[in-house]
Image (cartoon, rainbow, N blue to C red; front, side, top):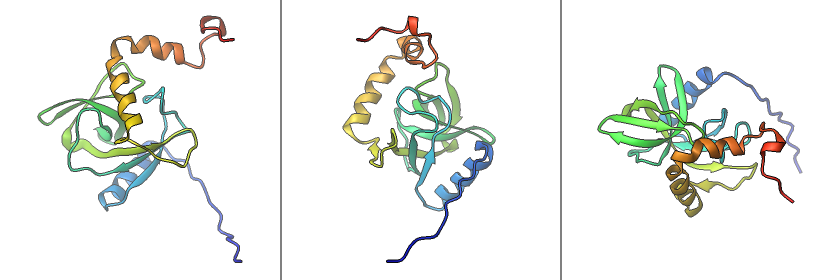
Length: 163
Protein backbone atom coordinates (compact mmCIF):
# COMPACT_ATOMS: atom_id res chain seq x y z
CA UNK A 1 0.00 0.00 0.00
CA UNK A 2 1.33 3.42 -0.93
CA UNK A 3 1.75 5.91 1.82
CA UNK A 4 0.79 9.50 1.27
CA UNK A 5 3.69 11.70 2.31
CA UNK A 6 2.10 14.99 1.34
CA UNK A 7 1.89 17.58 4.04
CA UNK A 8 -0.90 20.05 4.43
CA UNK A 9 0.12 23.60 5.08
CA UNK A 10 -2.38 26.00 6.57
CA UNK A 11 -1.93 29.62 5.68
CA UNK A 12 -3.89 32.30 7.47
CA UNK A 13 -4.54 35.63 5.83
CA UNK A 14 -6.86 38.53 6.28
CA UNK A 15 -10.29 38.33 4.67
CA UNK A 16 -9.50 41.31 2.44
CA UNK A 17 -6.75 39.21 0.81
CA UNK A 18 -8.47 35.83 0.94
CA UNK A 19 -12.03 36.57 -0.15
CA UNK A 20 -11.17 38.10 -3.54
CA UNK A 21 -9.42 34.80 -4.32
CA UNK A 22 -12.56 32.92 -3.24
CA UNK A 23 -14.64 35.14 -5.55
CA UNK A 24 -12.29 34.36 -8.45
CA UNK A 25 -12.73 30.61 -7.88
CA UNK A 26 -16.51 31.04 -7.76
CA UNK A 27 -16.47 33.02 -11.01
CA UNK A 28 -14.51 30.17 -12.62
CA UNK A 29 -17.45 27.88 -11.79
CA UNK A 30 -16.10 26.20 -8.66
CA UNK A 31 -17.97 25.65 -5.43
CA UNK A 32 -15.95 26.83 -2.46
CA UNK A 33 -15.92 25.69 1.15
CA UNK A 34 -15.25 28.76 3.23
CA UNK A 35 -14.16 28.56 6.88
CA UNK A 36 -16.28 31.04 8.81
CA UNK A 37 -14.72 33.91 10.69
CA UNK A 38 -16.50 36.38 12.90
CA UNK A 39 -19.59 36.33 15.06
CA UNK A 40 -22.17 37.82 12.74
CA UNK A 41 -24.01 34.56 12.06
CA UNK A 42 -24.22 33.38 15.66
CA UNK A 43 -25.75 31.57 17.44
CA UNK A 44 -25.92 28.70 14.93
CA UNK A 45 -22.76 29.34 12.94
CA UNK A 46 -19.58 29.84 14.93
CA UNK A 47 -16.27 31.54 14.25
CA UNK A 48 -13.48 29.06 13.49
CA UNK A 49 -15.74 26.03 13.90
CA UNK A 50 -18.13 26.01 10.95
CA UNK A 51 -17.77 26.22 7.17
CA UNK A 52 -20.05 27.44 4.38
CA UNK A 53 -20.36 25.78 0.98
CA UNK A 54 -20.73 28.59 -1.57
CA UNK A 55 -21.84 28.61 -5.18
CA UNK A 56 -22.82 31.31 -7.64
CA UNK A 57 -26.58 31.41 -8.12
CA UNK A 58 -28.69 32.92 -10.88
CA UNK A 59 -31.36 34.18 -8.50
CA UNK A 60 -31.34 35.29 -4.89
CA UNK A 61 -34.28 35.49 -2.50
CA UNK A 62 -35.11 36.89 0.92
CA UNK A 63 -33.76 34.45 3.51
CA UNK A 64 -30.75 33.33 1.47
CA UNK A 65 -27.36 33.46 3.20
CA UNK A 66 -25.05 35.15 0.71
CA UNK A 67 -21.47 36.31 0.34
CA UNK A 68 -21.75 39.99 -0.59
CA UNK A 69 -19.30 42.82 -1.12
CA UNK A 70 -20.77 45.69 0.89
CA UNK A 71 -17.89 48.06 0.12
CA UNK A 72 -14.82 47.73 -2.09
CA UNK A 73 -12.93 44.72 -0.67
CA UNK A 74 -15.27 44.35 2.34
CA UNK A 75 -17.25 41.10 2.33
CA UNK A 76 -19.93 39.66 4.60
CA UNK A 77 -21.74 36.35 4.73
CA UNK A 78 -25.21 37.43 5.85
CA UNK A 79 -28.85 36.70 5.22
CA UNK A 80 -30.88 38.73 2.73
CA UNK A 81 -33.76 40.38 4.56
CA UNK A 82 -35.08 42.73 1.83
CA UNK A 83 -34.72 42.95 -1.94
CA UNK A 84 -36.11 46.19 -3.37
CA UNK A 85 -35.32 46.33 -7.08
CA UNK A 86 -31.51 46.31 -7.25
CA UNK A 87 -31.10 47.27 -3.58
CA UNK A 88 -30.45 44.52 -1.05
CA UNK A 89 -30.59 44.73 2.74
CA UNK A 90 -28.52 42.15 4.63
CA UNK A 91 -28.30 41.21 8.29
CA UNK A 92 -26.16 38.65 10.04
CA UNK A 93 -28.12 36.32 12.32
CA UNK A 94 -26.00 37.54 15.22
CA UNK A 95 -26.32 41.21 14.29
CA UNK A 96 -28.84 43.88 15.13
CA UNK A 97 -27.78 46.29 12.38
CA UNK A 98 -28.20 46.00 8.63
CA UNK A 99 -25.73 46.21 5.75
CA UNK A 100 -26.61 47.25 2.24
CA UNK A 101 -25.47 46.38 -1.25
CA UNK A 102 -26.73 46.06 -4.80
CA UNK A 103 -27.85 42.73 -6.24
CA UNK A 104 -24.75 42.75 -8.48
CA UNK A 105 -22.57 42.91 -5.36
CA UNK A 106 -23.73 39.47 -4.24
CA UNK A 107 -20.92 37.08 -5.12
CA UNK A 108 -22.37 33.71 -4.05
CA UNK A 109 -25.08 31.91 -2.15
CA UNK A 110 -24.49 29.48 0.71
CA UNK A 111 -25.95 26.14 -0.38
CA UNK A 112 -25.10 24.51 2.91
CA UNK A 113 -23.05 24.57 6.08
CA UNK A 114 -20.71 22.14 7.78
CA UNK A 115 -21.47 22.68 11.46
CA UNK A 116 -19.93 21.53 14.72
CA UNK A 117 -17.00 19.75 13.04
CA UNK A 118 -19.27 17.39 11.11
CA UNK A 119 -18.54 16.18 7.59
CA UNK A 120 -22.25 16.06 6.72
CA UNK A 121 -23.62 19.14 4.98
CA UNK A 122 -26.65 20.92 6.44
CA UNK A 123 -28.25 22.01 3.16
CA UNK A 124 -29.95 25.39 3.07
CA UNK A 125 -32.75 23.65 1.14
CA UNK A 126 -33.20 21.14 3.95
CA UNK A 127 -36.05 21.12 6.43
CA UNK A 128 -33.79 21.79 9.44
CA UNK A 129 -32.27 24.96 7.95
CA UNK A 130 -35.62 26.26 6.68
CA UNK A 131 -37.29 25.80 10.09
CA UNK A 132 -34.38 27.44 11.90
CA UNK A 133 -34.39 30.32 9.41
CA UNK A 134 -38.13 30.84 9.65
CA UNK A 135 -38.06 31.04 13.45
CA UNK A 136 -34.87 33.04 13.88
CA UNK A 137 -35.81 35.74 11.37
CA UNK A 138 -39.16 36.22 13.11
CA UNK A 139 -37.49 36.68 16.51
CA UNK A 140 -35.71 39.87 15.46
CA UNK A 141 -37.57 42.03 17.97
CA UNK A 142 -36.17 40.00 20.89
CA UNK A 143 -32.89 38.93 19.26
CA UNK A 144 -30.85 41.36 21.38
CA UNK A 145 -31.95 39.55 24.55
CA UNK A 146 -31.52 36.06 23.07
CA UNK A 147 -28.00 36.83 21.88
CA UNK A 148 -27.11 38.32 25.25
CA UNK A 149 -28.38 35.21 27.03
CA UNK A 150 -26.37 32.94 24.71
CA UNK A 151 -23.13 34.92 24.93
CA UNK A 152 -20.32 32.80 26.45
CA UNK A 153 -18.87 35.68 28.48
CA UNK A 154 -21.95 36.35 30.57
CA UNK A 155 -21.20 35.98 34.28
CA UNK A 156 -22.46 32.64 35.58
CA UNK A 157 -24.75 34.28 38.13
CA UNK A 158 -26.72 35.89 35.26
CA UNK A 159 -27.23 32.65 33.37
CA UNK A 160 -30.11 30.34 34.06
CA UNK A 161 -29.09 27.64 36.50
CA UNK A 162 -29.38 24.06 35.24
CA UNK A 163 -29.46 20.97 37.38
